[in-house]
Image (cartoon, rainbow, N blue to C red; front, side, top):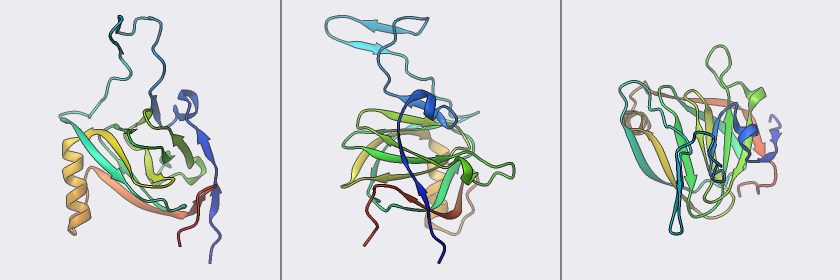
Length: 182
């Protein structure tokens, strides 16, 4: 049996996540040309301009994540669209990797981030990823491309090939600090 590589958990910061996409949930900026509004009742500001790719429609999904497995054996990527995930009911662990020259996951870039409830990440197209929870189910808001969702569901429920996503096995990796599955 091959020993799994240990994968430490990192705190989510904008700089640390930059190779994979964008951190969401940063403090309100102080101008610098970013659209924002503030008064006694509300604050809002532009966090990120989401790109679905050419001809794509944005879709908001509610996603329930339940896997607390420390083992990471495969990753998924979306070819055309960014994908944003914001945990609403608890923290998640977002595992990410860049693509190698042949398009497969570059396991030397495999990184895990703890994403706190109310923060989020937006992954670049082609960012390999997997999501875990540290305890009970976590509900997340996801922003993605509608056709990518349909394509992925079709692939996962039939023998149809995916055209907007890919799923690839990786050498065994294990998140540090999470219990092993029973």
